Image (cartoon, rainbow, N blue to C red; front, side, top):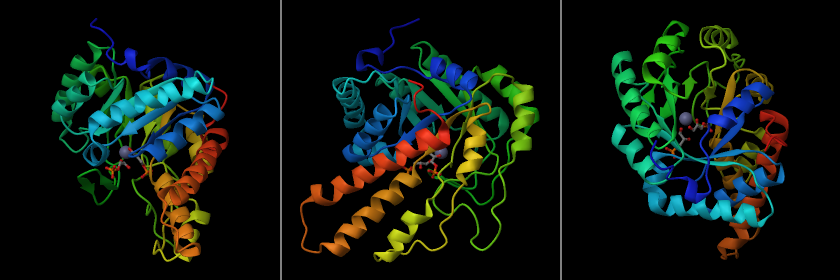
Length: 323
Ligand code: G3H
Ligand code: 13P
Ligand code: ZN
């Protein structure tokens, strides 16, 4: 095996974390970041709750913040956490990698985990591209997440009007042929802040499909994307202070808690952090219109995000105290 390029950044891959999460009946939080304040909030919340953490970088984040900068920010975050006296494991993960080249560039760049999202391809093409990424990534001991089934909503640039649930009969063959380390599945979650129709009953996640998948690939780590709960208190705060997030709805926390106790070892959350940030910043702008120091609105937003993420680790994912 070649050198683990990510080791010098102080990062780890997901293998050991998922094994422990599976055995312990909890899920590792995978939080997206695009800027310094989000990153500070994520690592602070995870250090303070003693939770392992997966820092996720999407294609959009790479374009927004620059991949080089994000890599060094993650390295800096590791140093910051160690200086706080915490030893939590930290993974740097590519979220929704769309091509072999994107995944390769992240592996070469020191990411310790990558996702190749071939879910929009026909099955055979998904197998082919996923296998190609696995073969390259494993040379550097970088772990790989694949996806089967399509989530409703927007998956970066791939939009799917309706979700196509993962077909349990495909998972064993996919895992065997590709050699992936974890598998993202579609059981009723979706990306973004508008997951369900307002006024209608929220349809429960398809735990029956999850069970069927678990039966076919026992012990294999499953990933849940689109797992924001869209906390209504923050949606109301956005709307109260001039925003227009009407009818925003997410996955109920109890269902995520239930999923975390099963083979689901990684839960992806991005939208909730965005809503908290927006709500707090809107409040500051509305209440202190003369304020123009970014620290005066980004600071409170960051502090509120720490609160939310600690709550997730402690009461939803169950990852608190597991580092
Ligand atoms: O799955 C999508 C993530 O929430 C990332 O979103 O592509 O807007 O950064 P983004
Ligand atoms: P949410 O939009 O529900 O936060 O999902 C995020 C996600 O799946 C990132 O890959
Ligand atoms: Zn996702």
